[in-house]
Image (cartoon, rainbow, N blue to C red; front, top):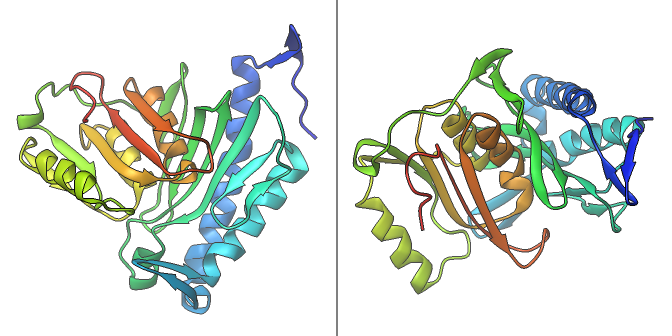
Length: 263
């Protein structure tokens, strides 16, 4: 079982070496789940429920069980996960945020933009993340303040400074209202190109890797975006997360630190 070694004023403080150990743990858990999702896509692609445009499939719960077991064995902080909700909920400095399969419809259809997403939050802010795009063989990892990597090679955000020259990653607001749709439409005209790939975790990882300049979405949940936001920060960018709580819908923006974060 993992133990933090440093305490100040009753609050646990982690050193960079300790965060690297936790990143290795998260990466191993994501890799195991991603390999299983890839190997068992045919038999795990069973739709269990449909909610509007969203679907829940057998793969979500199977991958989540694997990840939660790995985290419980090694670093049993509270977890907020897409399928299970809160696990070991309580007041804590550190919380895991887990999306066992971000992009379930993509996974069902063989569209490769889907991912296992695991993040560690400190005081509610993402500090490390893993986004394993298992169908593409791309695993993004990062720690804010230490760097970000794609399959072990360093990555960084792009140098583009003007939206008119850049790419925005976004999605149709999942809880669309008249105001959110008007804001969404306004963004479309600002950027050179707009991409909607159906996986928030993958989209944010692409910002971290310099493939796009910004990300903006309304109605995301923390498990959708925490790992990707940590990657963007680790790669030299910035993010903004606004909402009433970790288990409530959020307004999320991220970017390369050169373009203004999208409103």
